[in-house]
Image (tube, rainbow, N blue to C red):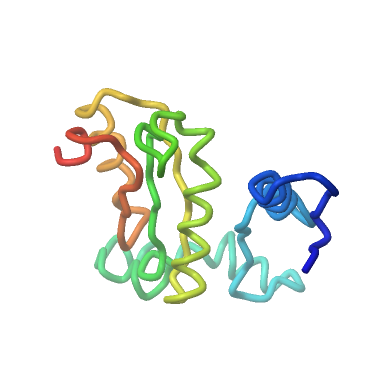
Length: 156
């Protein structure tokens, strides 16, 4: 059986590589996107989504931080975080080259559990600084998934 990616004389590994590159590039680069959960079709919607209406949920969250789970996406949002020091079988390829793997993890979260993901690639190898950066992201997410960070740094 042939696929659209088959090239005569090309081995299976090369065919898979070509297919994977095409998959990641087309029709839109990457594997994830952001879509609104509310309509924004008129001035009234805009005033609810942003100013001045957005002040109401902000004030509720000031009064009760747990209200963030009621009025924002936080409860269904996971940060998939890496510094790219131990990516799959590729090793220390850095945060940018690890981005396709983090997007892939995001696709798995969404497909199999309905959880939204932001992939976050951090250019930091010092374990203490990395922990400090990741901890500072806490208000954004309901959960943080540490991914492909080399041992023993991943255990700090």
